[in-house]
Length: 519
Image 1: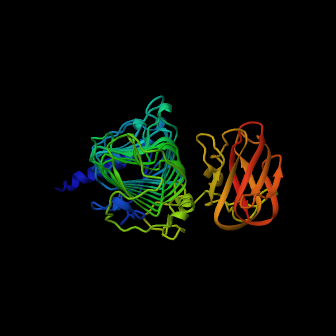
Image 2: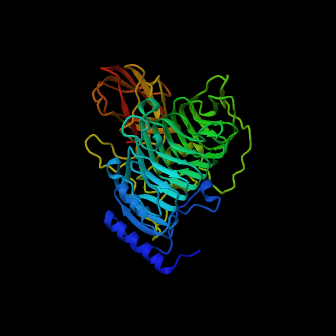
Image 3: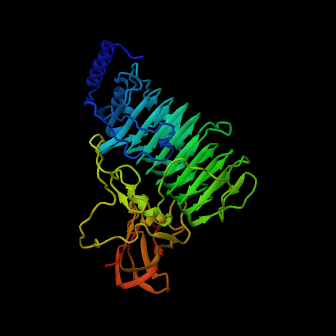
């Protein structure tokens, strides 16, 4: 039933006044608003469009986000909230209104629908403050970073979940997000991406989940089986202990994800859950698929996956790994269209597209990142910033770093580190040997010409390496030696694997990048 015109105009005036009071800017509604290519199960059940067609509002604080929600004509009036800046406890207060139900200390999307929350400009960071979706539908969250949300200690937010959904939630698309913690439950953190109590039709795409004890779950207990229909694709799970994700009942689809350093277990299908696992790349990990920590088993359908340096535990009570030779135990019918990238290119294409601040790039199904065509109603996003372009200097090689997207292995590594960290283009991650000496290698599927190497130590560990050798791992030949990490040149050599061997160090080395160049 439509409300009288006078009442609707009054609500609009109130919305404008509330926004002005909160210091947020409203713009005129657009004729259309693109979803930016929603995929997976979020396309089902009527689809997920978020705030398409609604007013666009700019917010720089959590209070302004709440004010935008509360200033709508109704709890279902479409709205696009563009967020720029850092949102934290200090700037996130409760706002009241007839179209919202908010709370301080958490971004509360509760009892509402038709909302897009998107990071713009210099980016949106939700610092120690989670996003909570409850009793809501048709929600898009895009191009945001959510970090260090705690359930214990101080401050706490959203039960320790970076993004948490519960209580009759439908149609949520989270895309190009970075979700990260700084430890596990003992450090006060919980899950990065949790769904429970009747949450359905969700897609998580092109996102990074890292440095957490728990990646995420579907279902809070073995009796919470009302959740499901969730798609995970083109995501990077890195340095996660378990739950990548944990599935209690329901149906899921995981394709073209890159899993690195799953330390205890990965995709944990249990309590009757079914998951289709297509063309993923699992690397430097343990027990990446199976049923773990329960006798209530789930099932899986597998095809086209790569298992690179994956170890498997022995089956036993409450421990049913799918490997070492994973075979399908069920069939999962997928109701939507999708295009698979070859598993071998997944590490590279995910590195270039996943996470906030990557320009919303997506894969074209041929392992090539593409920037979506601009739409006049789609919020602008920052261009890709990693890895940044550099101008070669005295010690900076020109050309392409051949290590990016290659494989990696090595001798025993220290807990919490990964071989893959030396070729991810990120100086904040690193590999360490289990002692003061050890080796790490970069490898390719075919012979590659290399004549220059740059080894970069992590911040705080510069100068720890005291002696090293660079080896052609195909033949064992020594290509170069040195006493400090840095740049090494040698006659151009065609090889499939090159090894940096640390023979002496003043402490525990931390190798951030092992870069290789043709010239």
